Amino acid sequence: MESENNVTTFTDSIVFDVIKDIANRAEVGLKKYNTTMDREDLIASDWVQHAYEEALDMAIYLKRLRKDMLAMEEELRAFKAQKMIKDKLNEDVLRKELNSAKDKSATYPPYFSSSSPFRVGTKVVYNIVPKPNETYTDLEKKPRGWHH
Image 1 (cartoon, helix red, strand yellow):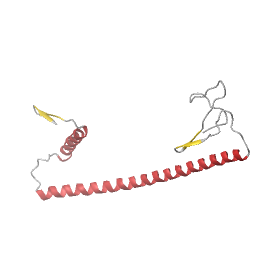
Image 2 (tube, helix red, strand yellow):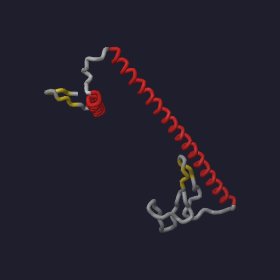
Image 3 (cartoon, helix red, strand yellow):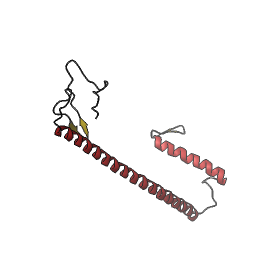
């Protein structure tokens, strides 16, 4: 913060935003109560009472927000748990399909290596071995019937 010729420059945008909010509140207070904080009609205990009442209001607002946040966090936990279950079921279905194919002595199409599929993290990855004179990239259509 630099001051020069009664002009103050702020390098912190958050501090500047708070200062603007304070100035706006002062304007609202002047219009609403027709006075400023320079008023002389209140004694110290009156100011403490006003501050106390504002703090009580803030406590109520915070309690309400905390209640809403806890509900949102619970929904998020349930969503994540549901997703984990869905991912596990999808993984189990894929594993059963692969085991079923092996049990039926099925052979992999020539564009899959014998080590396909394998796991990387939480995803199943297939090694694609192109047929002679063919290549497959992410931009090209993969062979029909093999989705992952």
